[in-house]
Amino acid sequence: MLDRLFLDHPRAVRESYGEHFVAACGFGAAMIVGGIACVLHAVVPALFVRTGSDVVRRLHERMVVKRVKSAGDGEALPAPQD
Image (cartoon, rainbow, N blue to C red; front, top):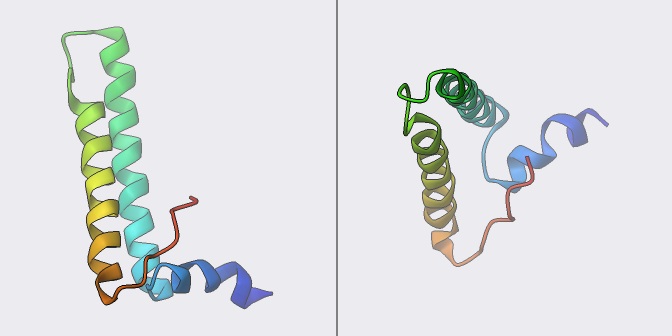
């Protein structure tokens, strides 16, 4: 049960638990900052005009580039689910 909860997904994306923890926390923090920028942009449209879309673009590139590099051995990684 604990193996399924804590290790199955990191193994599926070829990361240790620690590597996955750091990466997921980084993604989460970036999404929070981007979300706050979007809310502030909604209130004052002249602020943070591109910040939200820039965060999404950077996170997408990190995930796609990592996936391509990790799949360099010819085996594709599963599509992200979280």
